[in-house]
Image (tube, rainbow, N blue to C red; front, side, top):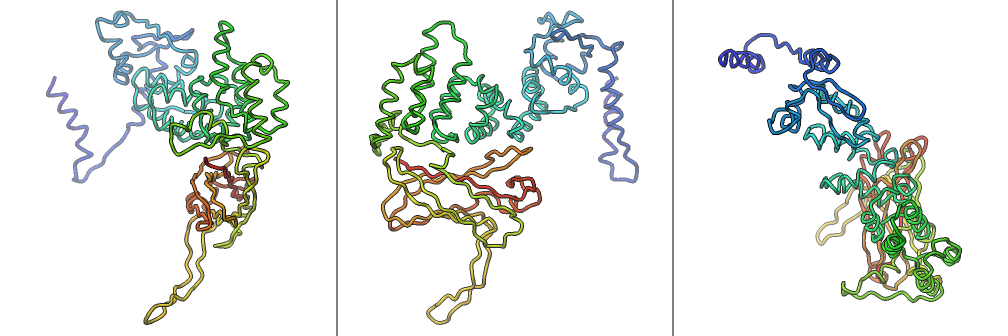
Length: 467
């Protein structure tokens, strides 16, 4: 019998390696279809899986060959499931709903993934150690962190952190940071774990309209939580609200908070916070952080701007009819930002030049010692943003350049570049190259273009002071 097995195996692989004349016949798809039909054939099944209220007729051979977990469960004498023809599997409700899809994959190797089922299918793939399915789910999630998945990304992020999926964690983290306002409007935002929420709130890289809208989002999250007693409610409130930067709110927003129901409930917490914030908005009372990192604490962060998208801190350059622009053409803009959070602070003026079709270097003459050299006109294929200032005083700033994309009419931040810069009398110009890939921007149906005609390039620029 062993010889026959080896002979059949040898004959099976021979046509693929035989260089002599012949014909290689591949009927693997038909065989696969026959095997996949077994899932519908209850007469040949030798095991039944009960999941929730559903029962699935299955085959031990298929289950054990596709999953190490099923192999151990159904063949090891120490497992009770190995001695019965009906196995009850306990799965989360979300996994129960997709178990038929998971089981069908074990038979066919085919699965249709979408935003709503990717995580529960991944959960089953990980639980039963079906590594190829898990990889497919992770790849799908990594490439679909888009507005259409905004109602699921929080759960993707939490699963990635819990399971150590670093690539997915990084992608989800960046999407939430850049599109926090969008994520905060989804019901799943209220399910975000408190520690993950606090990590976002500690960051100055969160992109939000302003601090007041961040407060409203966190307030909604807090009101959606359940508590066993008053003490637990107070502790959670302190934990999350301590990260709100009240001094960065406008005076009218602070005045609005005086009538907020949470302010009335936790008035001892808000009394000092609002007093310090109003004083800061009237006079520049922010602490000056030194180079010693030990002094850069939460008090300093309270007076640090996040990536606010309102007109005070940002501006947008929108290049319409991108395909009609000439090489080297410039789109300019001018705006001002405060050099602090106080209402009495002065403003810095910024001149912006965006080069969406590359940079043209005109023909010039290089003067040399023995002979001059003509340098021909050239094009430098990069997407550049130039920021300049005509002031001489020293200013240390963080410059954030975000590129907008759209999906089904919904705009979102798809990529970003940040740079720290010190402007002074010797350095008054900052160039940021390769904001996006040149060829990707200018191909048909570029992912970096928005608008109905997908022919508008839109860039959001935020400039904020650094302590």
